[in-house]
Amino acid sequence: MIRDELDPPPTDVANEWRPVEAPPASDRDDELLRNPPPGEHHRGRFAGYDAGRRVRRILLACLAVLIAGTVFAWYQWARRGGERTVPRQFQLPAGTDTSDRPRVLTWSQGQARLGLSREPPGVHTIELPDRTLKLADGADMAQFKVVVTDGKTTALELESGRIVEVLHPGATPLLQE
Image (cartoon, rainbow, N blue to C red):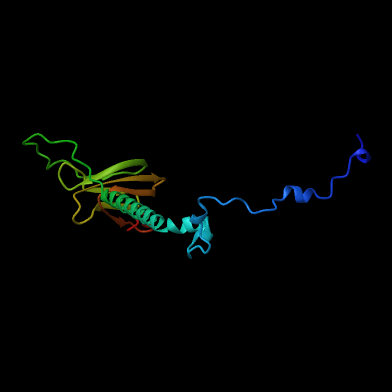
């Protein structure tokens, strides 16, 4: 079939499909309002979004309180660590004489983890080639790492307690106070 063989549509097709009279009356027609009351029905989804504003604010406030509480608890836990204490690892037998034991240690080469103690038989002074290390006032024990290379202290890291560094001529301080 080609286009020329088709019949042209009748001229009154529009009138056939369009209802000429009003639709029949329904029993529910009286429920429809001719003038709807003012409101937010025209806003659609935006009205629903605005209606949830209070709940969203409450949830965000709870989330903010939870985050602040977590940060505060973590800060308190991190601060609680404070200064590490080293427990005494040995006990001397009763009646042990420690008066003739030397309490000064000399370290001249290499790396070590050393400790100082006010109680005998512990060491209370450590002599390094370019400095002397002693316990600070009020400290009973201290531990630190030291590296001595070619007659010079290259690293000094305090692990626990407090120490005082007495420098010899030409030495630079290594403790951060």
